Amino acid sequence: MTRPWAKLLCTASALGLASCADAPKQAATVTRTAPLVRNQEKIIPENPAEMAVKEGKVTRIPLGTFFQLQQSGKALILDVRPGFYYGLGHVPGAINWPKGRFQEQLIQREAQISTAVAANKPVLIYCTDLACPDALSVATRLAARGHSTAILQGGFEAWKAGELPIE
Image 1 (spheres, one colour):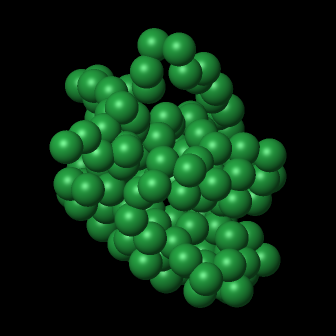
Image 2 (spheres, rainbow, N blue to C red):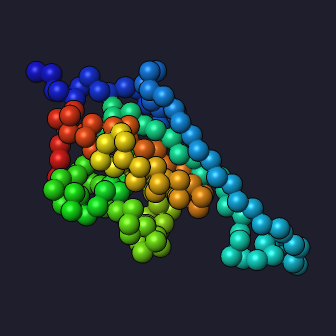
């Protein structure tokens, strides 16, 4: 018996974030640097608050690849919808981080992101649907802090339409 979502799977690239051939790739990069000075043979920023941040990238990921990573447990999944919607149903294993609570939860979530990156797990973000700007907003803010992320194309609506499991 074929599962309804079986047709969604596509092969992931060596980076683990490949998209199907027909899925568009979008990227936004943010780079921030500060002047450096020498101090006892070490290069340090003049102002530590403005430390150089490595460029973060924002890409889109198709449902099939997102599903493969979710099923394998090899991704950190962030649901950026308001908590009310998260409570009504979400991707299994997803952590709720509403856009409106971005700053409040930043330190905790950055620790989780750093742990995921150290374990070679991509950071995946989703919102309500394709038009939802919250995922792009959070992903762009994370890119400004040096974190690369991938946004689920079609959001939670695509997940539900694929008849995939919901918690």
